Length: 285
Image (cartoon, rainbow, N blue to C red; front, side, top):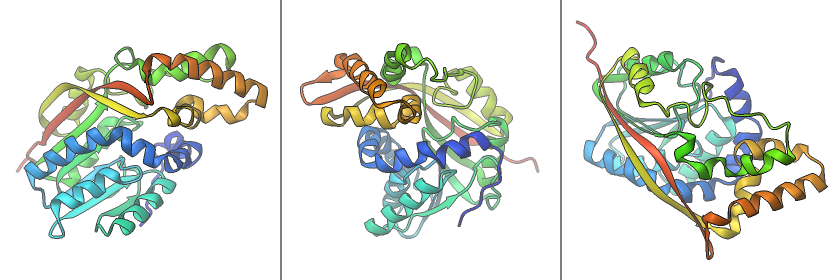
């Protein structure tokens, strides 16, 4: 099922274009890097034992599939994402694994989910991209049962996540046309301010909001580093527009900038995040 009502038009264009295809091409690498968060979420799923779970911004489906394994065949796991390439990859992954996870291409901000149809909603870095965050979380509240649990991971500030900005900072002198990040726009660090997040959730119909800092050690093979920064993030989205000589200069400069994170045959960095847990406020009688 593919249902997308265009509210997040810019995000839909990006994630159905270069960015979405890049995530599909690098899904094994990304799944490896983000696996610690998958484990934290699936442990919470096992403790909660929901009957019906929704994974928002599910990407290529690793977390949805892991949650479906924990819940078992008696439950239901649905992953939703705005990216058609990633949803297709998620469906293929679930089919290959023999896991009965379901996937829908849709904008979670506006999609008409069945009311009160999920008793747990999770997301691994998938909720920072809405253009109207209150509308999005109000829509998710309508999809949730009373007292359903919301559990999210989002990034803290750019200053606390220097690894994430290394590539674009190193490339900037050679690539002045690369757009600067807008801290107030939908994107990777849109949920960095916990007070802002609390207001969004409260206005969207969620209560008992608990936001805790979590620092997670991430790692991947050094041999994948060039692929990481040439395919992913802001640099990955514009690098192919440069000429071959400039591209070679950028790759050399950016690779050198990552040296502090290279330890032997591994790249290691800490992801500074918020773990957000909330409860669906009871609907007025």
